[in-house]
Image (cartoon, rainbow, N blue to C red; front, side, top):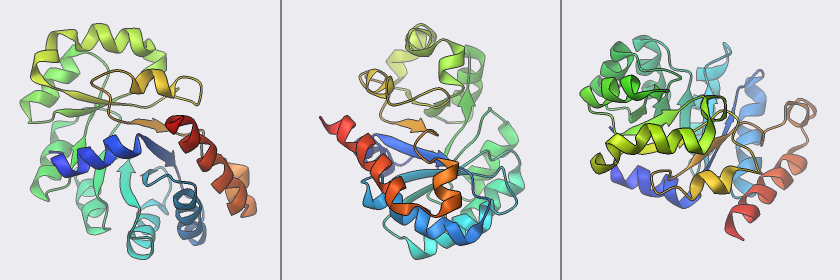
Length: 213
């Protein structure tokens, strides 16, 4: 469900900035600020009523940005995410109905997994790129290694979110089955609220520099 070309882009960028949008008018400058700081992939969550409209705005006006959508909880949201122009979708859990809906509209999709049963349910539906959530609360890297061990021969890849930060992101990325990580710490709400786009670009730049050093 995730094309190799998209996996390659995620592997190259290594970091996905996660955030929600309260004000649609701030969506495009926010994405532009992240892009200016070297972050080329976002996960815009559907936790606000403005989420899908913000996705459409960014996909339309910032074509260089790879737009992912998070917190997809229903089949209808999977369809709407594709219609809004998103490049991929993710969810906090493994819902077969949502996965099938994403497949119906050819939306690359990563279901959320937290244990071996989740992995096997996702595998049954053809998913091999999986969101580990909430990564740190589950036990972090040691948990990922233990949980994923029985499936290593299948070549599964994991996208850790939840508790990932500037201090541990490189440790996660050192794992051979982790091509990218998600970070909600990058986009600070106060910077967005005040329209401090240069401040946000500085934060994004610090992250990308840390990843490349």
